[in-house]
Image (cartoon, rainbow, N blue to C red):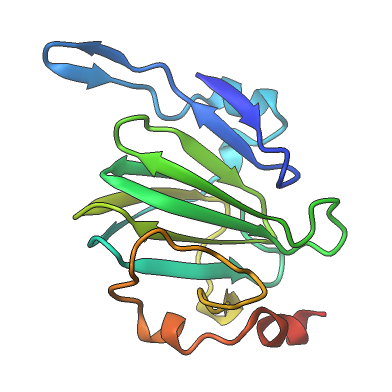
Length: 182
């Protein structure tokens, strides 16, 4: 497994495993504490694993956590997703940069998203499973949602959006969502 810095988002990394395949399929290490630690991320800092399953065209996001923020390691374990990260840390040299990735069960690549960045994705397959390794216990009072269709973010979702949650559909613009935290 190797760690690859994401220049567009300061502190973000792709973790690219080395799958071992044969006629049965493949075996892949999806987390390696030594590789994670080698880039300055505390591997023991993760406290929760979560999993979402989505149908093709579903968008989940854009989400981030207020307060101390929330860092996460995200991987598509089955299917494929169009993944989006937005740097919303005012002191970051990559503030307001948007970076997209295609994550898939075929590659098992993970993306590390630093605290203070918004995250969302669109399912490209039916279904797709996304695994999250998170560094803080969930506190719904700190949830921040930004409209996935905000023109300021200008995210070009690759498929027609087939479904979003009520929370995501009602989400405010980037400017409105961040007013209380400024």
